[in-house]
Length: 181
Image (cartoon, one colour):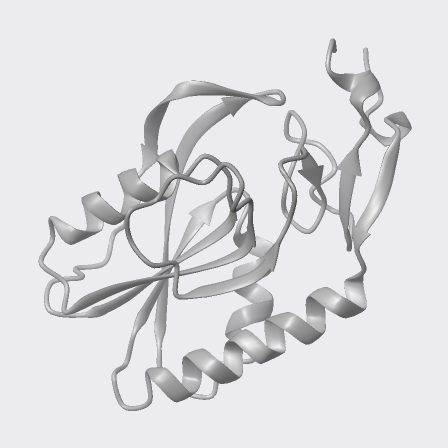
């Protein structure tokens, strides 16, 4: 059995840079949503660490909920999106902030945004820790982006490789020798 900790990885974004940027995002969101009582919807499993840290920087009244989808197997996108757990909150006439760990191809965030829009919210905004602008295909604005990164497979700070390595406190690039695993 493969030991994920032995995979070759290179630090891409340090824990300090992540915390500084998350604080900046929290300040911006708090300003933009002052008096609007938004609901943050974290996309499980990847966004849970980012969402927890982000909420601690928010200075306005807000709520949170979670939705869970699956679109990856190992390092490859499966091409389909499965809804595993839906939100439990009523978002009708609410300001919704979708919280993603990473926007890669853009398929998942498109799916989620359309699903939430179907519930007639006041607004839907997106905050993502990471975005791959070279390959993301979205036809709407991503209002809050932590970091833009190249189209490489990354782990840490909630992002995983086969459910492992989420616990790393920085963002790491997995080296190419794992492509065949």
